[in-house]
Image 1 (cartoon, one colour):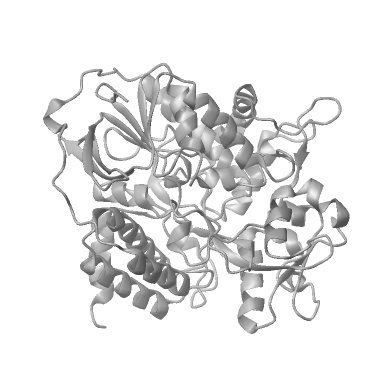
Image 2 (cartoon, rainbow, N blue to C red; image 1 turned 90 degrees about the vertical axis):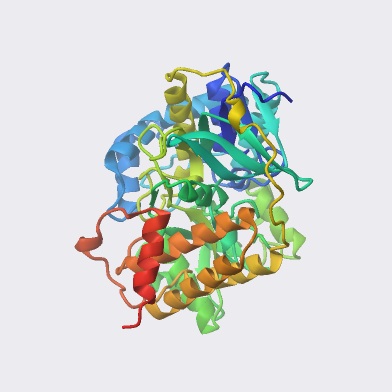
Length: 516
């Protein structure tokens, strides 16, 4: 592989990164992936599909309205309007790449409905296989595209600047060697932060690494307190926790506790179809009370389960559950991150030459709580916009030889135990329900881990956790995915996005740590 003249580097081998690489063709691009491309990507695990107003009875305006409602008052309306309007074109781009979206007998795209959507607008593949099918098509296309060079099983961990502009990055190969790659434009598409939590639906690669890298380079981060917990992960002690897609509830499946009660009706008239944060808190309450929570698909789906939802069926079968006849134990799990690297409408960060798309970015499209299936849509829409914006810039094809060097060997200590401690801290103190004293204790423990750490790769996860913790402590209200038992109501004072640099977060910590 020759990367000497590839001045555009994409960090991340998921949907956003690969789609961006394809859209940049024929410009030479290097994609760095922590795992083989397509593996270790949360995109591949997405079961439901892509939200797009493609049916005759749906409209872009309706999609926008549903997103604004789910985002709980802080969605950037210009951003979501652009994104919803671009949805149909991006779905057809994926069709052209070979994604086999479901169609009806007349050949029209078949759509389903999910919670908080007013219309059926989820474009799927075999019920619950959209993410896997999309990634298979993209990986095949990328491997056939000569302009894309791929570095697999390598972890980028530091952005290098020259004159306040991106000039390269440091990465660690699978053999433990550290190298520098020159770059004038870097796109971070590393995914979210789910693996910072003990119970998550995300792969190990979703550990906030790209967000922490950007923070260390001085980028502004946004909405870091807003973590979406999927209400219905399978409670079967697996890591990551298998996901029972929301589409099951869209098909009429009910949530019940140990007593057989449909408890969600106590929390919201919409019951199981209430917004995800409401459903997650409802299940969390039942689990913490000892009553437990189960998803009952036996009547609504029954014998057609294996055919309609093959992925969830396989998960259940693997742990000895027949979902057509038995209840599925469920628990909330860290699933999607609304926060991340602040970007503009073209995916441009506040650092010159640094871009972000996918879950690592905070575009303003999701607000405080992502509307179901808007995530894959955001990934392809902003990946395309990043590519278009970079293409319009003068392309420098000469590598900057001043930074092509092998870095001195840095500490490569085994941080597995520290990561497990961090995950437990995040779940206990910054989970579904939060409270001041608990969060402050959690932040102090994160700071201890930072002080003890000598690994620059793990440092990025710790920094992401630190900024998230400060943002959650600072927002003294409940909104969307951020729920505080000590401030259970929303406040008009806080009806805005939050923005922090790493320096801001560290100053805020010093203030919070001072004795009263």
